[in-house]
Length: 162
Image (cartoon, rainbow, N blue to C red; front, side, top):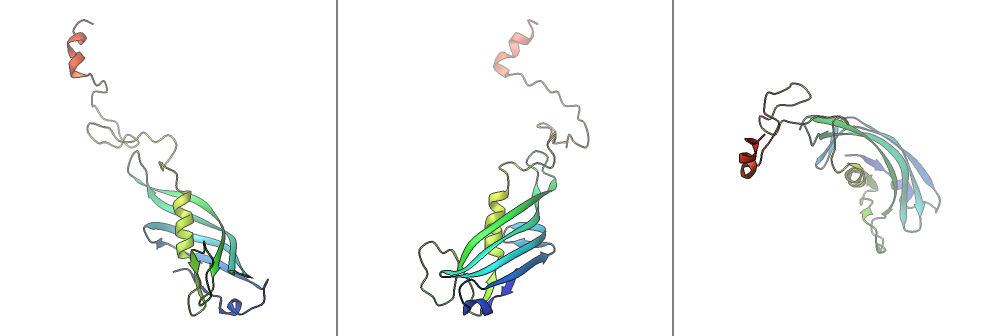
């Protein structure tokens, strides 16, 4: 959990702020695995709650879509979200709320931002050769002796004419 005690801000005047240092090692953000989370976040008291702004660097542990090997993806998360205060009437569109004891849990926000930072097809490297479709060999590590030319069986008779 990436939680901070922001109880001093829940009753503070508008504009009061608190700097939160995020620095954690390997952990899980629900279904995502991260190697680290590092950055600085400002919590600012606004009329609707607490405005959370900051930049957090991270590295996600993913699986390459071509070779299925584990890989790491560095990401930068730019946070800007309003957290509602406990017990207050929440305005439309407030997704996150500070806990009853004045604890701010950044994990749901970081998880959401991390999911949006993942490319559609994560690769271990740009020139990943992937797996052989016949034998399943990882072509980045070894070569295989499978026949590369796939001939449509309906056209196989024409091969004899060549």
